[in-house]
Length: 146
Ligand SMILES: [Zn+2]
Image 1: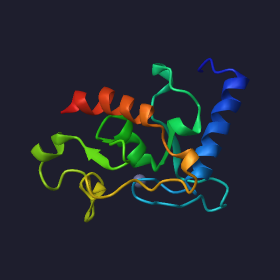
Image 2: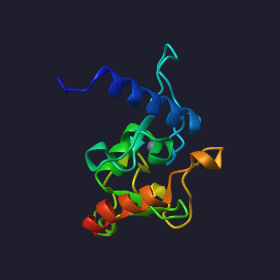
Image 3: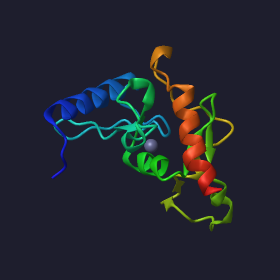
């Protein structure tokens, strides 16, 4: 059992709901927008750009709405973002077989269209990820994985 206090659980839940709502319940990479059969739970998650263990805050500008798969890929450094919100995929993708990461015909890494597509951003610019948070993720995850 983790030692999260009631206050920190409430803060995290507030962060989660705020991020998911800002991104209109869609994964900011693939656009997946599905919920549970009872419609109470969205599949999309609120990812921290700078994680808690690196002093990342529960602020909306430190969040991204990501589906489970893209959340994992972001947290392990398969991709990060440029300051203009375009996607950078780790160069390691180039040394992998072409069928790596395929789900049917869908390659969740190659489909990210780096250098051409921006992520799907919130409607309100004030909710966009902060450049400092993006830079932190880029410097601490992607460069380690080149
Ligand atoms: Zn996704």
